[in-house]
Length: 606
Image (cartoon, rainbow, N blue to C red; front, side):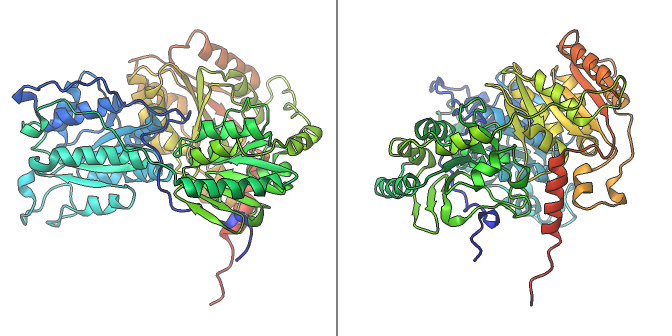
């Protein structure tokens, strides 16, 4: 087997969380102030229990699309004073919004109707599954009396079989429950929610449409707060892994650290930073881990992404004689078409519950955060690789100054976006060239950052921006969205306006699917141009606070940003940025050619 790591995938995940973990690494609070108050018989309903349980785990906003099978349940969710019900334009965006919400709050929830809603939200649930996000997908199901009959219901494919939705969602959820009997409803609801928190994955919860308002003795008390048994490392295995890892790294001359996306699910960000503080190694992140590690750390060198890395970062990582990857996922995108210049025998791979050193040995039942924290106390301090980085580092230049009224360039746009960032902002990057341009942004302390790299579903950012902004209203979200992606999910900008969000959306209008152009060009990558500002004005329709503008040059961009951050700071601001169709980052050009080469490999010999 080839010893290059770029072709490896991460091992199957088993979460080590006790509860959900937001992007900043802090454990989300599960409220424990609830008392065992007796509930009046008329209030002791399934709907009330579910609503209270959601509030208790930290969900104060749910994203829904009404349908006849979930209307009664929605009545009970609306009646819960601790919940805000956010109505979305379609189920896909409701799922994306729950995804974005979970990235900030640690857990999210959406409510849809039977099959037509469930299959519509499926794509968003799959994305949340790929990103290890706790998400409660609640579906209003058929009347409990219809189960076991030979009846054909609407919203089905015309067969007397109600399990199609369940079968489809089973592959992208870690637990599924069909509640069509009040006797076990309490158990199934609590098991579904607690499993999502423990496994840090979505769950599917179907509730018959006639059960939400019926009292039952099992719901006669306030929900008792969840209390999960802590997952512990195998101490003998931990000690053996630490001994082997310390020996491996201490004999290296130029070791480095690289953080991966599973730092989030392992709740190990703080432990990883502690290790970096202690050992003195240079610190980098994989592209899918941007935002998880503080970029103001004195030894932070940027994003390690093979040939499209931050300048001088790949040179230091790939020339190292030992590297520790914490929570990596090596797929074709993160490995730039499997072209990383890494060797397995030089690597320590730390997954949420497993450590593999070089070509072996491997140690299981070890929590990442325990291993990283303890390893920092064992290693000899070694700053050789960072000193090498410091010697070769040359500060990045600035884009060429624009001539008066010169057509706006993308690198000029992102120079101005960089100046907007602070601890009071968060960046959402859509799939496409925004991946590469946003990777180059230097995040100030406290600035949020999210994107969906593993699943890479275009259009994700509109719903995710809605959910993220709803979760942290104190931050101003800056969303960078391409025109092609925006056309997939544009409707829920109206929901952002409806709920008073203050997001700034930069709509980058370059006339097509630029990321796909660089992988494989064709006429299918050209899209119909829209009047994007006109569309958002129509969605606004004079209700709520919304401001739109279209910019073609740097002077207009500066004026737009000043307005968005000044007079219109309390508005949703939509800035359409018109750029040339071939104006892309150099990183996308390189990445696209390598991914194209990987996609076009000939079949293996038969």
